[in-house]
Structure formats: C-alpha cells, structure tokens
Image (cartoon, rainbow, N blue to C red; front, side, top):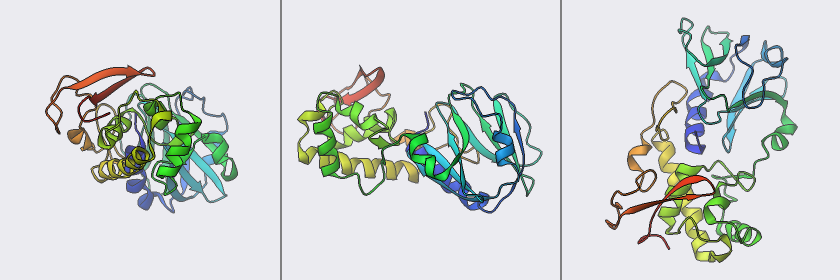
Length: 271
C-alpha cells in the first residue's frame, strides 16, 4: 500500500505540472471502488481548473478553482499517473481525466480499494478522519507520550499505524521506524518512556525524509506520477527480511504478526 513517502513523491512530481491546468473531460470507466464514485463526480470535475496539489497523510488533495477539493486515496494498489494524449488504455484504468494541454491523468487500481471524490474544502478533516500528519512539527515526544498514555494497552506498532492519531504511516515504514528507534513492535504503548518517544519522533522524520528522497518504496504496484519506481526498498533494514541477518548487529531478523499485519524486528537491537 502506498504510504506517506510514496504519496508525497507523487504530489511533489505532479503538482508543478498540474497547477493551472483545466479539466476538459472525465471518463469514469469503473465507479465501483471501495467507496463508490459518486454519479456526479465527472460533472463536478469537468471544466474546473486545478489550483494546487497537496497531501495529508495518505490522501492526495487537489484544490479546484471553485474552492472544492478533489480527494484521492490510493488504497492498496492505486496509481495516479500523467501520460501523453495517445497513451494506450490499460486494464484497471478506472478514471481517465483529460487536461487542456491534451495530456491525461489516469487513476488505475487493480484491487479497487481506493477512493475518489469531490468535496467541500471545509469537509476535508471529516472526510479523511485523519490525525496529525506524520511529518508535522506537532509530532513530538510530548505528543507521542501523551497518546501512549491514552492508548496504553495497545501495541506501539498499532498506535503508530492508527490514522486517527498519526496520518500517513503504514506497515512498511512503521517497521523501519521502530527499528531505528530501538523499540519492539509488540511493546505496550503505555510502557514507552519519554526518551523512547523522542527517539520515535526523530526516527519518523528521518525514515520518511530518506524514503521521500529516494522516491518511496516500490515493492509491488507502486509507481510515481510518471510511472517511475522508487528505490528506498533497497535500504529497508527489517521490513520483509525475516531470517536474514540484521544489518546493524548481524543477528537474525524475526517475523511475527501484530494486529493482523506482518511485522519484522531485531531482538538484539530493539527492546
């Protein structure tokens, strides 16, 4: 599933070329996503000009000239890519948006777990139900320590992945953040010390920044807005490396399941 670094990479790449473009046609070929595309979606987008593009958590937010927001969530396998007018249609091209310069913006999603909607700007918080962004300056040791006391019985991994608290983190990067901070994923959140919360906050900024700099992680479906792969997967320390030696201490990376998600850690480096 695309997480914050992948979504941020898409936004940084597409925003300069989409800003100011007018939408001249919208072809909804398959409305049955996880949340069905509204019947008036195409009508509400057609003729609008894209005023800007941003991100909150895993949500892409395209500001429209009438004050509305075109909201995009990629789900597990979604892609938003910009292509030439003659781009050949592909399986799972569910929405094709033609721009005034002739290029097409395509939403492709094999598993159809994504979401596309046009909403009012002041409805964004309610529509996303997302907490503070994982790259926000508000993600501090004090913030994490307070949340860990509020959710003391949950695991640290579950707390970091709770989009209602921290928006943008998913399974890949939470594994990597916990390794960088030296915290085991199954630790109870209520047992975190303030120093460990400080390490988690610092590790979040460091890991996400490094992943964005390398275009995110392309493990299966993810490509950026120009169909390029990311390369951060080559730097994963623990994710999907069960049984392999830890790159820090040489001990084996272990695997387990936490809240239904595959989880990876080093028993020597994480406490």
